[in-house]
Amino acid sequence: MAKEIKTQIVINASAEKIWSILTDFNSYSKWNPFIISLTGNVSGGNTIAATLKAPGAKAMTVKPKVLTFNRNKEFKWVGHLLMPGIFTGEHKFEIIDNGNKTCTFVQSEKFTGILIPLFTKMLDGSTTEGFKLMNEALKKTAEL
Image 1 (cartoon, rainbow, N blue to C red):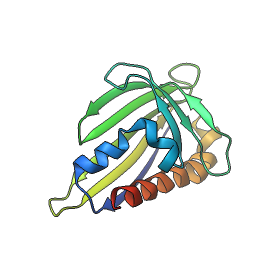
Image 2: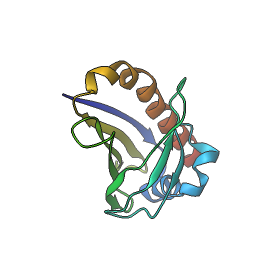
Image 3: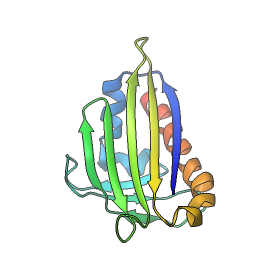
Image 4: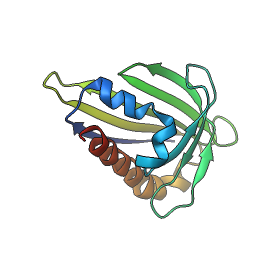
């Protein structure tokens, strides 16, 4: 089974400004309503800790592995529930420079594994809403 969530928003700011906010992990608790904490050495191959708080859900901490960390462009990680094949999520933040002093911020996650049917309602509901709330908060912060 597989499922993907993909959200995007146009932000009136440079890729550099958006990246600086997105990668200032010590400030997440001040502006980010969805990923309330992110700690660890964020570089390719390293394991980090991210605490997620979807609307109406309890906070949960995941320990994904960083896949890509390309300055001003892309940050991607992958995490598993128990082990690969059960429930795996590949989360990606992408900044696309539109060439007109705006950028499109894309937040997506591809889920795979045998437990996908059990989590579909949550993924379509509170998880997607959490993505949208984070996107809006990033836009608001970057456009100040």
